[in-house]
Length: 432
Image (cartoon, rainbow, N blue to C red):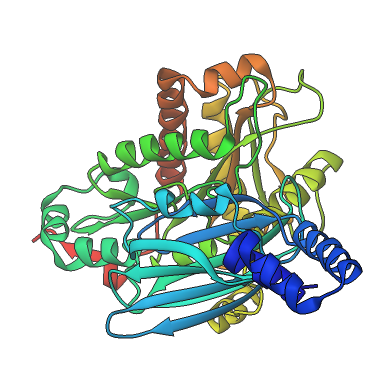
């Protein structure tokens, strides 16, 4: 509740209060107004945290508060600006620090300004580097987070780094260079080089940190480090290329990860994680494939449920639907793909056993949302338990991360040695 005396105090301080009191002419009225003003200030929404996640795909601004934040978003042209009005919010030092969190290298935001626009409205103005398609939505409390207001800035013309990679390999110099390479016997081809594409998915990211270790290691950083090393090893192979689904600290919804791999026409999908459990003595590496008939163990079911909660924690705008995804993910009669996933998982698990103990000696199955591509063999690799102090120490070690990447690429090569990829005209280069 806002009273006129509150407005007078905010605009003109003590002198404004005196003028208002003189007009009111009643000490009791002034006293009651002061009480109401104090109550109004106490009831204002308190901002507890602000975060900025810049990435080429999109920039995300998250405002976390103790209660839902009422808001209004406006788009202004010439020059391009976004105006976000936060209603009933207290302008505290946390909000005032938001502009300083926008870096000069942000792909979409040139400058940010924030201040009080009206007595009960705080205004955030974003000067943009180019036109964007904004999405603003709220997320109720979940996990470690309270109420969140999320503003996502997508480019008006999407600059998908994965699709840029496709063009680079197919039509650019890298594609020509790849065509000059001699095929390995493992591809099963004679005079045609089959360029094999591996989609590498670093689990979690951005608002979704994943599991945390006893010594403070964070899963999203470990998975990205291993993913980058795996890509480097795959790219060094004469007829293979790696594509990172996530190449930075930002969040990607689970189904979008699947969609990216399919748009890339990937031959395999490998999702990298670092497990956690309530008991610190749990240890060992695991490999999972999708199941159509339920989980193979209670632990696999628990893990799949936990991993599938990533969208709730990371923050997905469920009001925006992708019809392409709806169509492709309806096809769950993917027995052949799951069988190939199990074969891939078996070879990868065998290689992981050479550098770490195994949590389970077989490939397990459960309903992991990120593995639901109907036509791409897909596995989820839990490299080790980040909640185990000994394994956490190894997971943050650069040399051990390289060993993990080497084990994964060796397992992938062993899989293709027995299961040559089917030729695809679009990705086939002549050796003549």
